[in-house]
Amino acid sequence: MSTTAFSQTLTHPLSDLWNYHASPGAVTRLTPGFSRISILQEADNLKSGKTRMKFPGGIVWEGQHDPDYFVPLGTAGSAQFSDYCTTRGLGKAMGWRHIHKFEEGAEPNQSVLRDEITTNAPHIFSAKALSGVWGFRQEQLKQDLNHLAHARLWAGSTTQSMTVAVTGASGLVGTQLCALLRVAGHKVIRITRSATEDDQRQWDPQDPPENLLDGVDAVVHLAGHPIAGRFTDEHIEKVRDSRVGPTKKLAELAARTESVHTFVCASAVGFYGHDRPEAVDEQAEYGREGVIGGVVKQWEDATQPARDAGLRVTNVRTGLVLAGGSPMLDMLTASVRVGGGPLGDGSQHFAWISLQDLASIYHRALIDPLMQGPVNAVAPNIVTNAEFTEVLADVGGSPLSKLKIPVPELGPKALLGERGAEELALADQNVVPGALNRLKHPFRYPHVRDALLHELGKNSPSMGEPATDY
Image 1 (tube, rainbow, N blue to C red):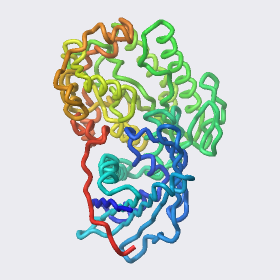
Image 2 (cartoon, rainbow, N blue to C red; image 1 turned 30 degrees about the vertical axis):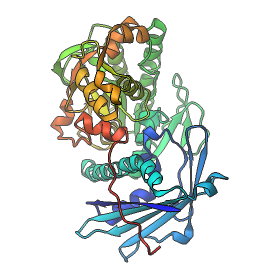
Image 3 (tube, rainbow, N blue to C red; image 1 turned 120 degrees about the horizontal axis):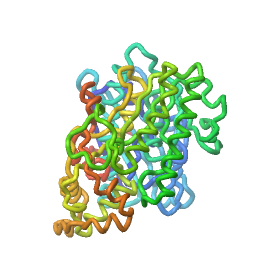
Image 4 (cartoon, rainbow, N blue to C red; image 1 turned 60 degrees about the vertical axis):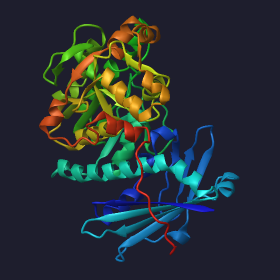
């Protein structure tokens, strides 16, 4: 057996570090998208709970928390918990045990997390396999604790614990947002078409039940047919019909529901159209060329009933989301790994945002009374497609990436159609986060290189020495 150890010092009190790990949502937040692992169940307590994950290939991992290793946070300034794999056959073969040890740091309001992972694999293989995952976990934990500290300031005198209803909760953004909200202490109700779990409520987007939002303080509306795809008339109709009508009905219901005071709705930088090479912020008019600008405007206009009723309404205009394991980033990474370069001439502006920043922006939109109206959810340092491709090739590429063969416009046009390529892959959208900049919002990843290092698992973890006193 071999043990791999990691150690991380954080500028946060030990209680914050412990409470984070004890919160529902922590496992989801600390599991990287590039691992392709789905969380089926999070442990309901650190002492004896159970976590279940689905690995690529359909393997289900069961991690049992061990009461014999549990030391609660007390006055001694340290604590720990442990889990081990109980999946039949796999657990015995791997011999996996993970001990999480929490300690006071050397300075005030400083804490240390030590992770020890023991397996049957030789240390050199175990350390290499875990390096990318722990690089992600350490960075994610640091950034989440920083975000939660900011969130306490943004909330101010308003309630810091709310009941939040989320549509589209199982999607890329919804999954991370729901986990972040739970870590922050909010109760999340997932609005789904077929509710089968305690934290779910069922709805028909075309006819939501009158009691759907009973007891809900705030709504986040993410659901809708994916905009990406081949731009046929049928596809565009699905995009429009899945957003405009359902958004209006949900906004009307929120307006009628006494408990609801905040309505946050997804939107897109497609609002500005596909040809905006000049810098535009939230004050700019919508793009009248093409079809997406008009659809997004109708989508945002559909939230008006909530605004008319006095609810605080925020429309989050999202750029291209960089997320490890997502189809878009997978496709772009695959392209550079076989020598692909920029799309077309590469001069078009690439309005991007990291998945983790986007989750933070949605959380702030829920709790910060200063956030209302349209908000551009894009990173402050925009790049051209050529610049983005250069960084992606450097971070996640291969020896062939040096070729940087431009991808002719014919490629995206064949995949997305003439209109789709024009409004998506080849769009020139120089969008700036005006509202967030005015609020001095602290972006986790203002630079694309740092975002890609995190999402692709390229951060090096801080290693530690295995302890001997367990």
